[in-house]
Image (cartoon, rainbow, N blue to C red; front, side, top):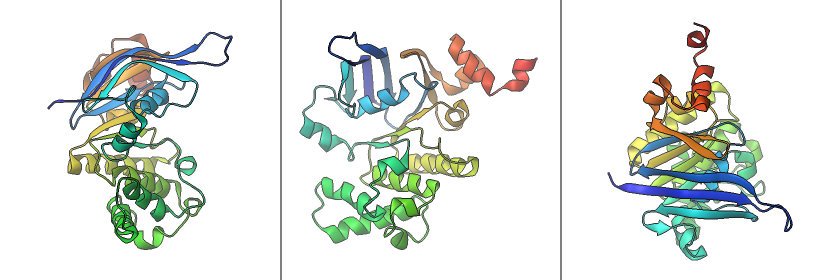
Length: 266
């Protein structure tokens, strides 16, 4: 399989004030992802995980300066024009955001929000766009999708809102899905259902998945390979089974020990 995404020497700096020195968020991060591969990005809060995910889609907020290279399907994301980025986002490269209630428009029905993805990428027939949205809502496991499409985000449960975001992200069959803490606000049962859905959709579509999480248990059940972020640096990049068996970096060992209390006590 060929390389789909390559991150080379990525540095992110937050410019707080004109007179202040920039605050480093990421420092010299490099890794690659192949077509159809599943990679977990693991790290504690504040390690730079979400900033890394946003940088892949060139969605960094104002005030954050990026250096290095991010290449996706041959396109250099950091230097691409706004039009080129918009063409790729949603169609070839999609993201599921961490908090669905914040990511969804509270004033718009969820079916219209999913249909909007198709319309933003050239579907001019509103009826066809809505039909595709309802079909996708059903494919991500939402019962009575036609009725649910008429509801507003606040009328849905947390797991349902997360599935709506997933439906929007998958609507145009992307080559890579970036999922930022997609289960952090869900209870254990719904979390397992969403992870199972992600794996099933990945197998069905042959897409690559980059799963961002602070929870090694979530990554261990989903990802073939894991990169570990600590204080803005990538400190380990290994097959997930190898990481669980013999982590090399002290921070990785601490994360592994946290899910193996019996071994830690011996």
